[in-house]
Image (cartoon, rainbow, N blue to C red; front, top):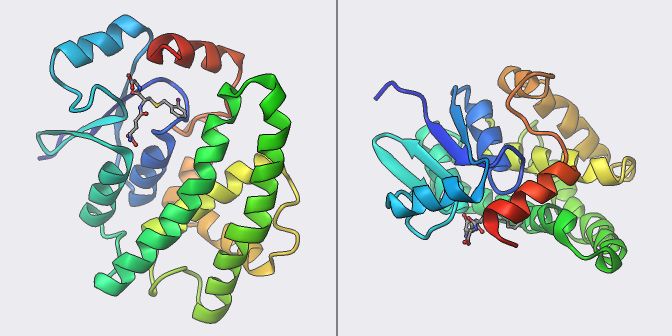
Length: 222
Ligand code: IBG
């Protein structure tokens, strides 16, 4: 099928941003249908388009995919970003899911009550520097080469770069004690498809602002 995938979500990062990153890294063009109000979400639900009445939803290959991790895995496998064998897939899964655990803290941050925000930021900083970044730093050191798994770009590299850039938006010098990750960031950011996605005007979404928080609260009723 040669039509472009269609991504259904609000016009902001949330749970769709990693999917945008992965398509972009794979060099696959995609269209976006933004949900602009609750009525549009309810219409997708009443049309039976959302298996669990939730987005992200991606139309691809004649299917309507839901569940972020399932979508990401499908895209990774389809576009050869999911390793060469079972062991590499497992390694990629572990690296990706670790990075996504940290991303979940960042994604939820704008919706926390003001009194919980500072503590959440501290948690993000501590988890990043003591739990997650050391793992990727060590992996790059022991594995050698430019990539986290195997000898070519994988979903793990894409997800870890997305996570690094998102954490750096909060803590700009977070990589100062991680030299291998500094090199990794430079190298993966210069992969042509990723470089293009990082340039202004791409489908990469900006950090959340008040308008985005308001929209999300209205659309998803929280
Ligand atoms: N397990 C699902 C997945 O990973 O895709 C969860 C999807 C999900 O929570 N979707 C939300 C939704 O559709 C939108 S992302 N909610 C409607 C409903 O009725 O459940 C909302 C979200 C944001 C930021 I934005 C942090 C956490 C959730």
